Structure formats: C-alpha cells, structure tokens
Image (cartoon, rainbow, N blue to C red; front, side, top):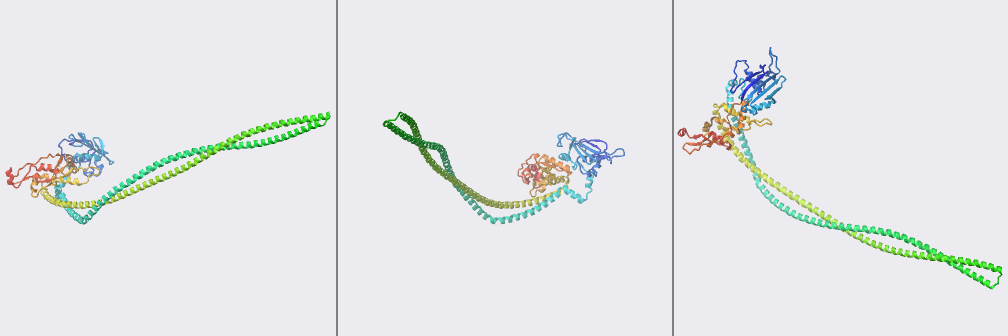
Length: 640
C-alpha cells in the first residue's frame, strides 16, 4: 500500500485545486523554504484524522481554510483527499484504490468520506489503524521531532534511552515484585494463623460430622418406617371409606325406593280418602232419603188406618140403615130419601175404598222404595266397610313404610357418620404423615446444614492449606522472579546501548497492552503475549551464553496469531512508538533441535537448556535449536 495521489483544495495556501502524484517508494518532499512542503505534510496529517490543531500549525478550524489574498477572496471550505493504492489489500476494504476525503467548513463542521461515502471520524481512524497507518505512526514524522531529540540534555536523553531500552518497565516490575513478595509473606503469615486457629476445631467438627451422619441415617430409617406405616394406615382408611361409601350408596338407593313406595301409597290413600268421602256423602243422602221414605210410609199407614176406620164406620152406618129399613115400613118419600142417603153413602164408601186403594198402592210403592233404599244402604255400608278395611290396611302399610323409612334414614345417617369419621381419620392420618415428613425434612435439613458446616470448615482448612502452599510457591516464584528480573535488569543495562530503538517499541507494546481498552471495543493489543526475554528461564551460569545467542531476539515480542502481529505493528505506527520484532506463534514452523551425542566439554543444545512453557517451545527451538553451548573456546574451535 502506498499514497498514489493527493488532492488539495482550499487548504491553507492551496486556493486552487492541486493534485500531487506519488509513486511507490517516495518518502521525501524536497524544495526551498516557503514552497509549501509543510503544508503538504499538514494536509496529509489532517486528512488522516488529526484533531489537534496545533499538530497542523493552526489554532482553530478556520485557520486551515484559505483566508484570501489581494487577488482571491477567502474560501468557505477546505478539502483534502488521499488516494491510496490498495492492490495488495493492506487496508481491510474490498477496493484496490481507496480515497479518503476530509472537508472543513467555517461553521466548524467537518465531513469525512471514504470512496465518496459519508462516514464518521471513528470509521476513518479505525480504517487507518487496522492498516497500520495513522497520524502518530512512524510513517509520519512531525516537523522538528529529530531536532528535539538531538537537543535533549544528557539526563533527559538517558531517560529516553532507558525508555527505549525497556529499562523503566523492568524497574517498575522489580518494585511490583518486591511489593508482591512482601504481600505474599504477610498473606502467608495470615494463612498460618488461620490454620492454627482452625486446627483445634477440626476434631470436634469431625465428631459432629459423624454424629450428624449417624443422625441422618437414623432419621432416614425412621422416615422410611413412618412412611410405610402411615401409607398402610392411609390405605386401610381409604379401603374402609370405600366400603362405607358403597354401603352408604346402597342404603341411599333403598331409602329412595322406600320413599317412592311411600309416596305411591300416600297417593293411593289420598285417592281412597276421596272415594270414601264420596261414599260417605252418598250414604248420608240415602240415609236421609230412607228417613223421608219412612216418614212418608208412616203417614200413608196412618191415612190407610184412618180410611179403614172411616170405611168401617160407613159400613156400620149402612148396615144400620139397612136394618132400619127392614124393620120399619118407611113411606115412599122417606124410602127415596133413604135410598138417596144410601147411594150417597155407597158413593162415599166407594170413594173411600178407591182412596184406600190408592193409599195402599202408595204404601206398597213406598215400601218398595224403602226396600230399594235399604238395599242401597246395605251395599253402601258394605262398600264403606271395605273402604275402611282398605284404608286401615293402607294406614298400616304407610306406618310400616314410615318405620322402614325412619330405619333407613337412621342407617343412612349412621353410614354418613361412619364415612365422615373415616374421612376425618384419613385427614388425621394424612396430617400426621405430613407432620412426620416435615419433621423428617427438618431433621434432614439440620443434618445437611451440619454436614455443610463440616464441609465448609474442611474446605476452609483445605483452602488455607492450599493458600499456604500457593503462598509458599508464590514466595518461591517471587524469589525466582526477583532473581530473573535482576538478571534481566543486568542484561538490559548491558544491551541498552546496542539496541535502544528495538526495545523501545517492545516496551511500548507491553505497556500499551496493560492500558484498558476503549469502552465497547476489543483491545487492539489483546493478542500480545510478552517479550522473549520474559518467557524463558535460563539456568544459572548460562546467562551470558544465551544472551549472546539471542542478541536482539531477547526484546522481540511474541503474539498469538499473524493478525495480532499486524495489529501490533499498526499500533506502533499509529502511536509513533518505534519499531519491534514480532513473532506470531501460529506462523512459526517448529524446527526441532539438533541431536547431539554427549561429548567432553559440551554443555548441550541451548534450546534444551532453556526452560519455558510448552506453547512457547516451538519458538525457543527455532531460535536456539541449532545453538550449541560449550565450556570454552577450545571445545568450540575443535567442533568447528
């Protein structure tokens, strides 16, 4: 990737649109004073997203816009466009040519465009950061920076050299290690005190733990036994409840049948009472009619007797007259009157006989009617007697059904009471079972809590022991670390004169990784591991040999992947932090060390003498796998 073209319009002294064509490898712009070299550099820096007006020799945004002259009026906008060649796709964008434009207006507003599309400032900065290009990278040196470094005092220059040699960081690391060593010793004493405090309670807790375990076993056995017992009782109660319910249903059905039969009998009794009432009414009518007929018969008998008497009196009178006539000789005139009286008397006798006959006939008719009424009365009495007997029978049956109904009601009440008693007993059994279950759960919970307390105490003891071991290991590691740092400090002091620029970039990367990442973004140096010198452990007495073998590789930075190496270099460029050698672990091809037989005077292969973690072994084997460490120069010359 390289800058192919620069287009400037309205930026500082460039009132007209200017186009600068660049080619691969162009790094310097030369020209006399006042020709605009600095303005070109400022335009490039400004287009890269520079926000400090001081860095482009201005105080405010309006200062970078052409302010006008005697022949040209001022302009309202400044625009700078960088056209970059991206044929190798160094920039993470799918174009072989990328144009980045920045515009500034007198209102203070800024616009940013990538390939003509409006974007944010953060998008531009992120694009150049990922491409390892930025306004603070080594690719862009500010004016006067070299003179500033050359003009430094010896003391300031020493600080700069120490900073570049990564010495300050190691001094800081040494201070931190010593502080951590003191803290580790304090923690070790605290852990020992905790152990002394906890140890006397361990035996008591163990006894409590055994008792709690035994109690848990007994509680579990009791809970199981109670569960079996109450399940049996509950099953018996449920079976009794089922039988009682069946008997209750059966008696309820019989009660319903008896109630229906009683209802039918009472209905029949009502009907018979109604019929009996009607018969009683008819009987009373017949009895009344009988009395009337009896009275009428008596009256007729009296009339007949009276007529009979009158008839007898008339017959006697006639006989008397006939005897008088026979005894006395009556003149014709008197006989005629006697005949007339006799005739009148005969007529009256005949009339009385006829009336008597009528009365006799009426009496016979009344007698017949009386006999008919008596027959009806007899039949009515017989029917009444039958109805009375039937009513008494129905009453008896009703009483029997009522007694049976009362008995069934009592039996139903007893069955219902028994059912309620069984249900109450079932509820009681269930409550007792639930109470025992709650008690068993409470006991189990108490056992669990006791066990947890015991386990917590054991864990605390174990943790205290582990902390003690860890503290002792940390103490030993800290002591080893202090010795290693002291040795590295000595090595770095010896190497700071020979490679100041390389260690400065490595130091910047390590310190940059320690800084927090921007909120919501991934740390740009997340893949940085450490410097090679901090990843290896050199046996005592071989420091000089390993130092001579690694030389500048001691300050090289190890990263996880190739992308992390690219990001690290981009970060160095962006922050102008110098250069560094970067080794991506994923790209290192493991080159196994030489196989060397035991020979007199040969210490061994350097890679096998140096210790490191397993993931860094391929790098160590690659760097030191073909370096042989010998006791002296004579052995080395003999091997050569």
